[in-house]
Picture 1 (cartoon, rainbow, N blue to C red):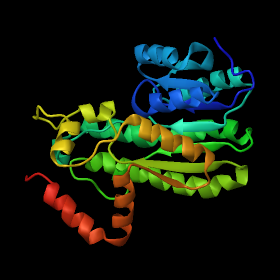
Picture 2: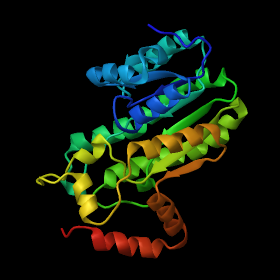
Picture 3: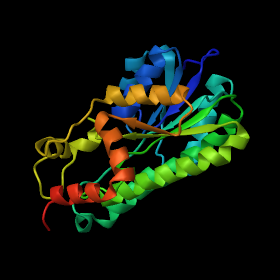
Picture 4: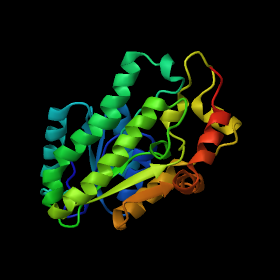
Length: 267
């Protein structure tokens, strides 16, 4: 297994695909050592090949498992001499469709991965972040954490939670010398958008595009993550539409509500 050999170190969840993989490629290209974690063992092996085997290590990790978090980060720290410059909490899932269409298991899965998994990651990473000067926790939220999104009610609730956690920890962890950033993308071309509403043959990406809404490439998100690593702001937005949503939700919430209602499918 490769070791960091003095390089800066980042640990990424959900690294086998989507924003996680795109970010891993960016970090590796910049000379960082990358901890790739995911539940997808096959995808992880491909991800390591994609970034170069000498540039990282893979960890099969279910973010819902607190004990597994502790073990994975301890193993990663052995390769980095205890260094953890950035913890990137990226893993997330979404279920698309009317609120009442979701099974209990679908609700629990989103809460467990999107909220509990992020909290567990932050808690497990803190000792290593505290030991690394200038370290940063980066949590991936969403524009769905700015204003409640119809057909994504539970997902939206989880992303509000990630935003709130990030804002609180940025204040609390200043005493530890650890800063926090919350990255809030508009819709990104990831496996999440490959799902569809129950009973529909159309995936979420196609539904969005048919409604005239943009879907941005994962490289756009990775670029913003990279900027967040080196910046001092708390909130970072991916895509022009995300910045527009931020402004509108702050200054014209009534207009946002009206627009979302007009796009919401009839029940």
